[in-house]
Length: 428
Ligand SMILES: C[S@@+](CC[C@H](N)C(=O)[O-])C[C@H]1O[C@@H](n2cnc3c(N)ncnc32)[C@H](O)[C@@H]1O
Image 1 (cartoon, rainbow, N blue to C red):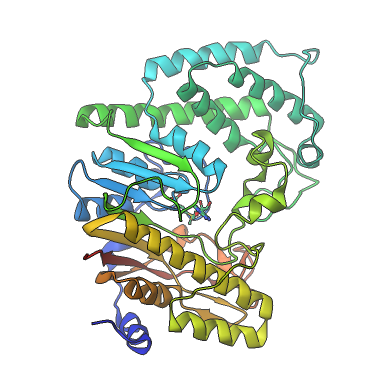
Image 2: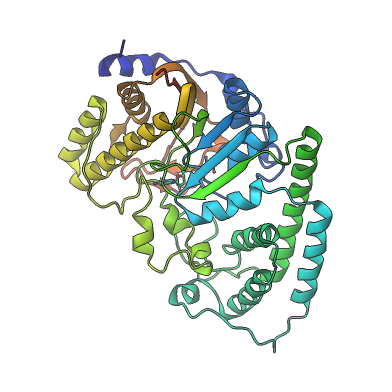
């Protein structure tokens, strides 16, 4: 029988932390093993959480899907466990990174291409003629010297014919852009630092590529040893509400959804998006993301009394925020419908989510998701509560605005000291 909204709130409130899911003992080296350290990405999974979920809920050869694939943690882990996998993300930058991370390249082949590329780059001198992009936003972020060297680098990578190898170097290129620009280094918001001395593109690229080559080597040999080099592992740039998989085909959905008005992924990844011409119009790009504050009004179906109560409370304080939250919950409900469509009978979800506050109102994402999933006919199997070790906290939130803020500001509150993993099962 379905739990009432009140019972859901009480039930979630009583769940105790399971310390075995905190992975507090892990250091950076553990969480960036194989290809996981290729590229920075906000709010990425700890690979060990995904690996444990996959091993617990699936068998070798099963299909695992992540509708909010981000930088590909789920499908990389699925591959190392011999599970077929598929990820979707609306952000082309996420897809670029995922493609590189999921592709194990023969180490000696990669080394050969690296040496060829290095030689071409070392031929560069001040007089080298380079075609540079004519784009106001690129000039806003990059000094002329950096822009010229990056353009040269970009053109030499573009000449590589093998697409996997080209994408590997493009991923390295993307990850150095922040360091080589005047983007305020630790900021999650696009802020310029006019005093910053940007890094040299060539040196930074070589360092980045060498670290990635070590990651590729261990990924390749691990897959080879386990016999999983050919295991299917796909990524698509698209919407979580339209996953390219047939009905009733998936054993497990593992995902961590975006949060409402937290990260503006479109803004955060604009340096890569600019170089790769992912979008000419940033404001159009932003609207495609669930959780963005640049949403456009659509028909709202909350499918949750808890969500309705939160939206009503917010509406009394700040109308715009209430519309943003309503849009978010309504869109998440559509994603859950899509998850249900693709899951096999007996297939499970593992949705990682935390609660937060906006305008001093508690945004009970966990309780709302539980109610929505239940109303869609999925059955609760387990809800795991885990502590997020402080070193893994994505950021902290401003108590008034709820937006992510700098960790150094003492008045701010911790954003997600705990989070939940929602295990639901499709029964029919
Ligand atoms: C919390 S991140 C996922 C991080 C991921 N677990 C990882 O380890 O990298 C949420 C992701 O949702 C994506 N996203 C936002 N709106 C989307 C949509 N409509 N469809 C698909 N992905 C979307 C964002 O681009 C972002 O990558």
